[in-house]
Image (cartoon, rainbow, N blue to C red; front, side):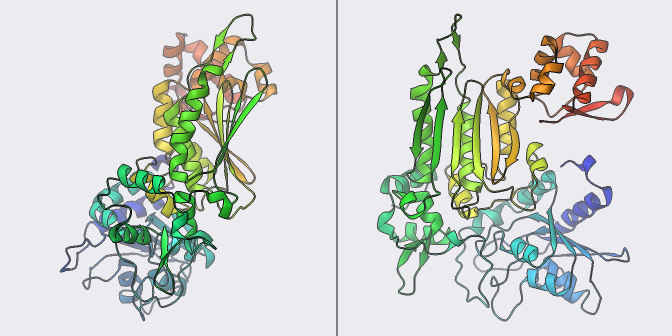
Length: 499
């Protein structure tokens, strides 16, 4: 969501929180580890605004603690709105008897919290957000450009966060994001694939051998292994998905079901049910081997179908595996290749508070449903570290001159459609709309579908039309619900709607 679409007062409070963040005071540490820079803004119901940053009044004090307990201990904050650049720490993440910031926010009866970015520390990662949502507190994320600033200013902290030991005694059980965080029933480390572990080690540039104590400890810190009561390491559900030789034996919803739908009407299928980290390469090899067959030879005029946009497909498949909801036991990730499209179905609605509309603008806030999976794929450079791969998918489609990917929701699946050809953009239009479009207008829509916004000048230049012709086409697209007009006169802009 861009600044122009955000109510100005909300945007200003986000910007103020980021500005205040810069005043954070790092506490002296013997281990030279980074402290996060955090800024917080409290907007009270009477309109008063107060700010705080980490370490402002005392070394180590969290910004939320300073704001709620030190500056407003006796104030009534019911209904207030809090803006904080970093996810509030979750219950169980601090040494007893300290309360977490999420608990303090709940006790203060804050109505809504705007969160800059999630805290990558494994004791917090999305658990603070989940606690607030379950407590009935509305949560939204900062705009994407401000998230980038926060991450850049905290680069060292975030690079260290997932390496930090999570051994402090917990006051209460943390809020689980997924049952996959715990030990997965009837599985042992011997069920892991050495090939998958070695692939991860090499791709992530890890020097420790997969049989070393250091490598095992790394997997424990990443939530891939957990330490049992007897002190031995056991796989978590995430570990089984990532590295299990046969994950679907323990988790039937794992893996990817792929189908190539040939022009002749016949289908060819393949189930990728091995370790998740090996699925992208195995899928690409299979598709490349089959591509020569994806040619329509039954037509009088032989038609060769362009090669698949493999970078786009890889990004989309990894996103489906990483961000799906594994609690939907009956749902499986699915991929279908046709002449003009590649469709990927991923079980689970968009991750709250992200919306489908934000995903379709390729500007959704950074958030991961399964951070343990996301981290491993990001280290292997198979996933975008700072988000859901939306921006890179958009850029790759534009580079290839293809229509932009399209997101829809077909309960319980998020459905992503990638286009192999420009013609695919018109083939997916509802029949009633296709009947209304002339041949030239269909060609024009194929160009428009490769944009998020467009002006009459851009359209006229590309299509080699007069200004009058361009505006006539764009007005028709808007009348059919394919575009949404904003502005007026020479400042008119058209936002692409993907039906």
